[in-house]
Amino acid sequence: MKIMYSPCPNDTFIFHALAHGLIAGAPKLDVTFADIDITNKLAIDGNAPDIVKISFAALPYVLDDYALIPCGGALGRGCGPLVLTNSEHKDPSMLAGKKVAVPSELSTAYLLFRLWAANHVPGGVGEIIVMPFHEIMPAVRDGKVDAGLVIHEARFTYQNYNLNLLTDLGSWWEEDTNLPIPLGAIIAKRNLDLESITNWIKQSVQYAWKHPDASKDYVMCHAQELSPDVAQAHIDLYVNDFSEELGDAGFAAITTLLNRAAKEGLVPKIDMDKLYK
Image (cartoon, rainbow, N blue to C red):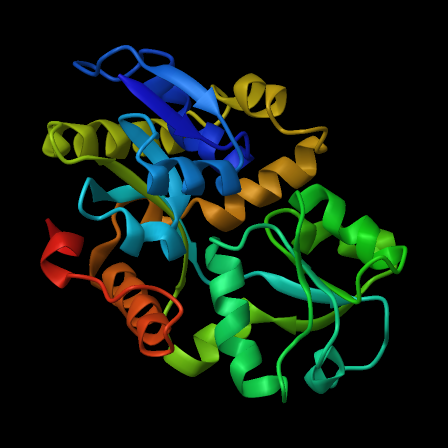
């Protein structure tokens, strides 16, 4: 069975047991690593593997062929994307007509940014530039762009670039909705045994928690030069109860985000029956 997820510590931590044949009854996995911008495009184009990690923002485009797996993804509180600048000004209107770097136009981070900017940046931002997320902070620091939308471990490292926080989109979302922020989804082709896939992934999450040291070499091997402390902070932030089971709050967060985005014309309207089946 072919699977694709990111080399980020939360994904390698979650899928370590499944990828290494430690879950009874699960098939051997053929793993490919790719950043979320790549997995989003592959899934939308119909070229993704059997199981794939994508942004929740891309979910409305793939539900005909893929089902949402209710575990293994990334939702949570206090883990949202950040908007950074090299200015000390805190007024969001400063972004009007300005150049902003984002990690993907199909990412949940960018979807949240668009929802936020519609209400906080009069006249809208100017040019949007897509670049790999590890290039965004240097670009902001060096003045190549006016602001950057960052994700993942950038929450812990942006101060190293002498950058300033303009807004925490996760905090904005949580204050506005009282719901967790939905970031990354695990999806699988609808013609597969979805119940078994769900159980295997859930068991892999549980194994990771029960044996936290077992995955350390695997995590650090793919951690893109992160320090062990930052990699662990990344895991602590993104691997939580929602990783084991989306639950009512998780599904409420997903439907709220996608319905709001559809109302603004940012994504297609989702078929609720396909979201739950």
